[in-house]
Figure 1: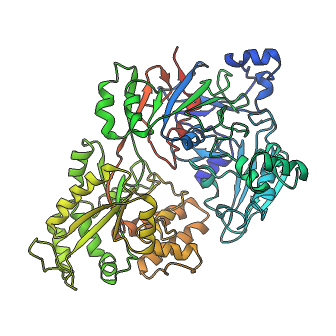
Figure 2 (figure 1 turned 90 degrees about the vertical axis):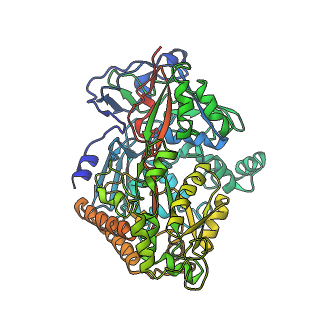
Figure 3 (figure 1 turned 30 degrees about the vertical axis):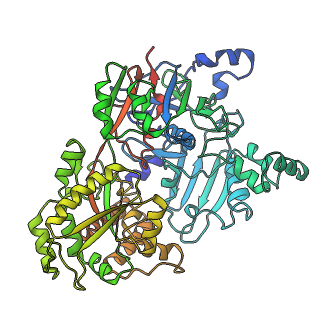
Length: 635
């Protein structure tokens, strides 16, 4: 239990190269941009705005250090809805990931975990929302009792992440700054869901939300608000103002480092520093260092050229590796640095043979392990890396990465080498020895072995990669057609069993620990494109989809269930490796390439942005785990 003990007995700040410094008799320094507001009485002084025990950042890496407050950071987004990325990047969480992808307390001062099923959250006394109102246990009680358990707001009951095998937790308010959630069985996904790039929020600013709730607001006043804001009823009104992740309501109090100040629709969103933010550096400076962030909305196709001309101070969103040569040329001229951060998905691009295909002949083919292995062996990943990714990525199966403590080289290498001789031998062994005049193998029913790979049509790079795969598959007697579609159309065709094979990204978490959920390795969801109907069967309690009818897949489900009940890290680690062994040997998905570098463009004056880092959605929150609240401008 090393990992649990290290996390939950002390509070830590979650950031690369950042740790906790002892508070002692620290003298806090007022933020220059807030001095006038303090003098005029609009804001209390810094010592009164901070929690009694703020989170104190200590920089431990040589490339990161104490900064100077001030400045405006500009960044570009492709759509108005992307203002939610400020919650992703801000990465203020009850519990979050550190640079090693271990879970540590953050907003919460301490979290006690007993038997993997009892979770006690200790909040920071004196912590306040961005509007100055106390952040307390009442905010947790409101969300649980007045939202999650309210049949008008949550018609299906509490959200799934709060349930443990159908059981809702016992919720207790211990005191003003302590709450507890208890289940009768382990709840292994609870904390990881709170730490996510898109986190689950188990609290709300109750003082703000109560004005829109029928339990607390005068009925006449509530009806008036419903009419004024043109909502259907009070529930719709409540939903409209409840914006913890969408982050598009400037009136909604936040705990994030920056708060929105203007209403959508807009092409320019201004985020000002949160004057009640809970972190300080060792010198007593309140974070964030940067006073404001301006998010400018631009067409996706304009983000690379705008970045190249220096119109953004920190940019990764909207950029791909194909933009790197152009951006590199303008690096010195336009005053920025460009880094290449490896991505952390199990694979950038993956082929998903549909084991639940409606056609019996194709279903039989895809379920034959020799066929899946043959297609993987007939894929020249080295050529893909060289021609598409400038040789900077890693040819690999859809597997966990070297940065994971669970990593073994065989997971990425086995059945992922380019071996046409072995691929042809496997296909011959299956009895697929007949070929037509074009050299394409023929199925037992006389149809040519022609596979249509469907894409979402969103990424032109997929087509370039698939054309290279098609060339080498043809040498094994397999013809590939590429069919662009739309995201929802593609998913619905996969779910219904119409699609033979789809292309999508790989394992979302390529850097798991033993405590991370191995759900991606088992048929738990119809979103897993290789076995959608099995996942649908589970998700609907047998009302739709199909029951699992392959022994190895059933075993993966049993192992996952065992992991959810495991109480020791060693036991969970053992289960992880057994699941990874099966997943690797069975080649349920055909990964093509991993660790594709993400260009990260940084203003030359912007400090504390690591030059070496991992760019990942979850875990990682892109910039989030490196905490942009510690980034600062050299004047």
